[in-house]
Amino acid sequence: MSDAIKHECGIALIRLRKPYQYYIDKYGTHLYGINKLYLLMEKQVNRGQDGAGVANIKIDVPPGHRYISRYRSVASQPVADIFQKINKKFRKALKNNKEKARDARWLQENLAFTGEVWMGHLRYGTHGANEIENCHPMLRQNNWRSRNLVMAGNFNMTNVEELFDKLVSLGQHPKDEVDTVTVMEKIGHFLDEENQRVFDRFKGIYENPDLSDIIEDNMDLQRVLHRSCRDFDGGYSMVGMTGFGAAFVARDPAGIRPAYYYADDEVVVVASEKPAIKTAFNVEYNQIQEVKPGHALIIDKYGEYDEYEFIKPIEKRSCSFERIYFSRASDPDIYNERKMLGKLLIPQILQEIDYDLENTVFSYIPNTAETSFFGMVEGLEEYLAKQRKKAIMDGILFEQDLDRLLSFRPRIEKLVSKDVKLRTFITDDSQRDEMVAHVYDTTFEVIRKGVDNVVVIDDSIVRGTTLEKSILKMLDRLGPKKIIIVSSAPQIRFPDCYGIDMSKMKEFVAFRATLQLLKESGLENRVDEVYAQCVAAIESGNASNVNYVKALYDPFTHDQISDKVAEIVTPKDLKADVAVIFQTVENLRKACANHSGDWYFTGNYPTPGGNKVVNKAFVNFMEGKGVRAY
Ligand SMILES: O=P(O)(O)OC[C@H]1O[C@H](OP(=O)(O)OP(=O)(O)O)[C@H](O)[C@@H]1O
Image (spheres, rainbow, N blue to C red):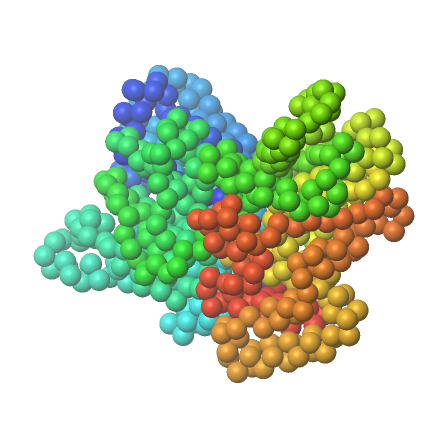
């Protein structure tokens, strides 16, 4: 598959359920929908910062007027860029027509982006150049309103080749072999068929101009989605709008990618994360619902909505990396889960510092790890409370000992600051090293040189670049005796192919550590065995059955791999000792009990395509091919 594919990671949809004039009268502005979409998107910039796009549909404009508008941007602040452009357009049109700003009919007939259905998308691209063609929403246009399709998504298919071949076997001639095009054309194909089906059913009963309305009223989007998506293997939350304003949000059968919605009599709104909806519409968390796996929220032309099963749900394996890193922690569930991740690490940390709290300073790597840091501190407090109780129960003889024990607090400092509000992990590969090296800054004069240990929590260690290129050197300059890096996520051992996109084996520091361990233990033949198994499975078309790569990790304990990671990420001239502690998979499951999508750490993929991807990724690694495996 083309390497230029982009990962589409934040979605937003707003359907205004009342006529446009209603919002102008009630809220005193013609910008109600657009302002809400802006908020929904700004609140999801954490999901993608490389590009953005919006599209809008007007439901009731006469023929001859434009009814689909779209802007996309790859500017450095893409969301702001798009909305500035739209606002400029408004200002220009209303400059000499100020009174028209309250006239819905005039606005809809004369200005773009004044429709009732809005779609927004934030792009997260980790491969290839950052080009506008890769930005969603995508358009599939037609002179029949009901055959138009606008789509945006947070998705990745593992079987794009297969899907592509099917399109070709239908006689189509797709312009590219990337999943965006394949998925859109597939849905578009069945949307065309549905148009035809309804047309055939009613032709002869109604005259042609009326037939358009009849088609729109009788089109079955559940059926379209069922027919299009049944052979998808991947993770997806896809938003679609038809030219007549019916819309859908479809979620994969394992619920891998997230989608949430809220509805009242004025709006139906969908986003990838709950906090975006909560902030933009000022609603309670318990009013926001999750789109069920294998279901689509379908909103018809009249604004009526419901969830429909379009494909049989399978075991729910929602992505745990969303909980650990990707989503905003202002979602109350995620906040608690992250805190729990921090807290559960305490026993491993105490052991590593030999229970020496007096000579240990605790801190975190901004920004995502901040929440787990709070949990870690809570865990320390709980540990201390138990120690105090024990000492009191055991009977302390001297008053000063009791004073010391009661007044002792863990030493917490802000040692690392992040200068820009950018997520380095989801930045284009080409710029990342440079950014990682300069984005952090440190606090001097709080560490006692040669005496203190420093414990620093990060949410995840993926490639190890952040540690190697920046954090460890910076912390070492403070002069600590020992640096202990704690990861709130377990060891990332296997590639992702469902949207986060961590796809190349050799990038994972835990994988590199394991290879080194295999070499040092004289078990290198295992590497060749696994390679042979993967090749054979791919050749026989059975690569989806088993994840052969798991066997590479079997000979080693969690701690052995962690120690080797520490060795790898430690720059040669570092003075302090370095240790790395990873979360265990068992504790991850405790903390994020409802989100069992943990294939990154366990290799247990939610769809068969995952096995194929990991086997292929390993073959690519062995053959020195630096390409993605799907
Ligand atoms: O081991 P690596 O491959 O270097 O990746 C892991 C780092 O990347 C992320 O930071 P990022 O800057 O994306 O985001 P944050 O500020 O939200 O933590 C994450 O929080 C880790 O610090």
